[in-house]
Length: 462
Ligand SMILES: *Cc1c(COP(=O)(O)O)cnc(C)c1O
Image (cartoon, rainbow, N blue to C red; front, side, top):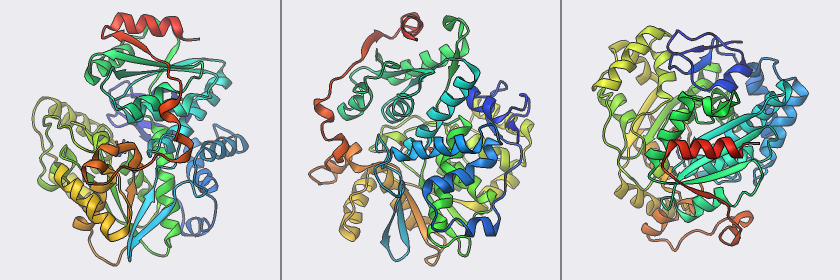
């Protein structure tokens, strides 16, 4: 198994190389050269297995023997032992045919833990084997940073530097990052906004001279291993509801498209999926593209579901590559045009997408209404991201017979603002975090200057 770029001009890579590389040198994203298949019998034999065992079986072909089976099994088991629910990602039945897949039982209470608990361990394994060290740099407006830190805190061969905008993230989100006191974790509060922080990370990747040859690794969702880890819960939840003997549909609160693209990969591997429903907030590029073929950027809107606030969905490129029947030149041309002006997809690729995907966009006012309505009907308090999914599933499902699984991407306690606005007194943090507001914090405040940040990284990495 090798990995190829969606823009067709970068060299093919092994699994190990792809995990350590991030973006392809031609500006594209890496995808597997062939899609491994799960036969009817293989899917059927997963019924009743533990999440870790299903994870091992689903991911094994992608790892391609580059980590031996016993070691990889150990990595997977360790990653998912950090989750507080025995089922790792439990299914919660809401009504006759609508289920919530609770992806928020990991250390930081959002679905990104599923991939990042695994990715940190895989990176550490490869670096150990190569006798190398690496630096991770990332910018966060809240969610990804804490999940990345939790995923790397035990990694001997990695130092992680996460930049957040000083005094512009919520106290809970800041403390989830700054109370991790491990020697290899560095939180930097930038005296600027999120865009300043992100620009400095991008500039550091573009010119890595300040690290004297030490590798800089990206853990954002363009890293293939994150997609790979997310394929697993589509398979596990569908099997729990009767796959491969019956099909299910999935509804996915979406932003950068990494999560729902993983679902699409599960379908390509052989999982019977009737429909994917993409839920967006007011930042609705995915919905506009599917519904109206309006593939254009619009101003960023700050919403009650902040982890879905994006202008461009980076992983959509991976789906476009499939829709354009793996024509890297066509994808490159489309995306270069898109950077400069409002664009549209060609007819045949758009028709292909519409065979598998529906979409629905949900406003802030509707998010609040849905949180109240869902509680009234089911007793569940949904987080605002999951609320977009709940509504989109009801609005856009093709039929009432096929079970629909809405992905619950965050715990409601993590996004208390929306829950309180919806009229609830708030949701307590789960027991393992209930002393978060008393824990010791550690972080450094730096000016929004590239040289200051790079000097800090160069001096503090171990
Ligand atoms: C990151 C995130 C999303 C969006 O996921 P993508 O893979 O970027 O589409 C949705 N909800 C929550 C809570 C998130 O943290």
